[in-house]
Length: 119
Image 1 (cartoon, rainbow, N blue to C red):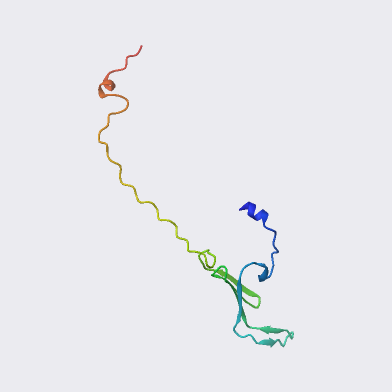
Image 2 (image 1 turned 30 degrees about the horizontal axis):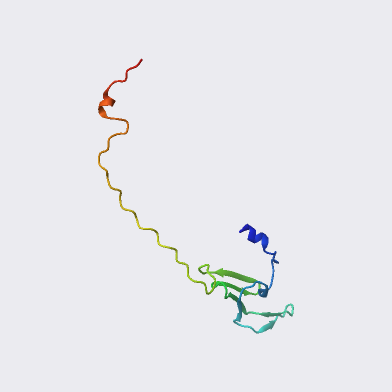
């Protein structure tokens, strides 16, 4: 991932939609008429502009005047890609067979009962 970042050319922080390499749909809805303000004479609109990404379904930006909101609700898959289904986990293993009583690896009981002779 680090090599990819170093190999990619640096991009401007603010750039146009056509420079992104993604497909976008821009719509303006609501009251699109221009109203001239009596205070300063500047024309203003009450329209809401929405920008929707066709490459990454679920990515949307909504803006009105100086307010905006970015939202992504999706599966993290590009448009047209196959759905991702992780493989099922393996079956749960059966309990191992109980071998029954097994002699201790240290020796027999008779050897353990005998006192150790000290020299």
